[in-house]
Image (cartoon, rainbow, N blue to C red; front, side, top):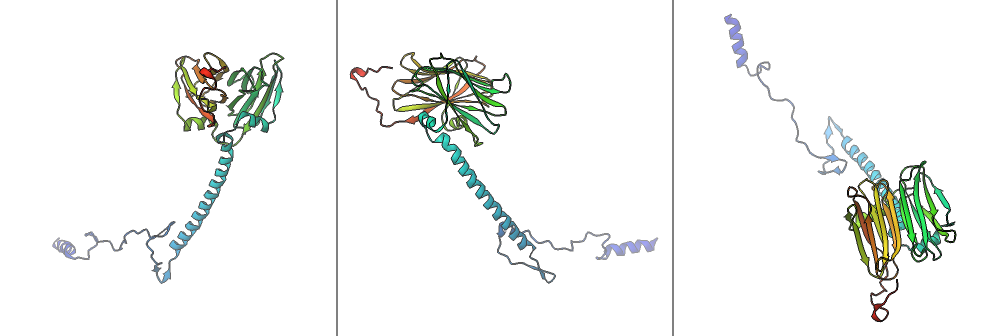
Length: 329
């Protein structure tokens, strides 16, 4: 027994006894340095030799990442430039102001006789459709509807123009989904035909309604409320956008010139005011023009409205042209 006790005492005193003492690590750890990365040699170090052979793995990886990064960068640059070119081409249709007369010269319109119906269907790739209506100077009464499948009209518009030549109708309808078609019914008499034209947009970019709301001031019009805004004579046309938070949208947009003198009236219904906002450009020739927006829905259905000038003629000065400032409208 004393023999084993002496052996244990000697083992405890012997410094090389690994079994009973915590030994320091036998490997030396170097501090971490960002020597090589996909950005290159950050510390400007040279490749080190390991076991007599030069290790080029890091530099090769660096070169590999650099080449991949360069190709990706070039790819992104090319893609961005292509996207920029595509975006510029698509945005020019909406951001570059064009009069309705210029657009009618570019499209191929059709004639809709009084009491008749014309429909136009298009592919699923079409994001939105711009509708243009005019007459030869006579009044215009028409119903414009968006059809999506059988017996489904997610958007409807009733349009009245006192003079379809001086103030033509111009609106943009969003067409998400498939099986979309635009129906134009001339509700006037046989003596009052109208000219209709469509222009499709397949750019894949955001529409003029979303762009208008993102770049201009807007306000909330509660259900049953009225919002009016006057414009000076230098404003030749205004753009109006109506949108909701996803609930149905019921509104009436009027162009007044003088007290209770309606030059243009539009009654709008949209099943989803967020997916299909209403965007219209109203020509406002002359002076004393006022746009009035009425939310015809109940108080549970507010809407967002944005109104601002679209075309401005700086050469027109707001001053009376006759003694006493008499103006017929």
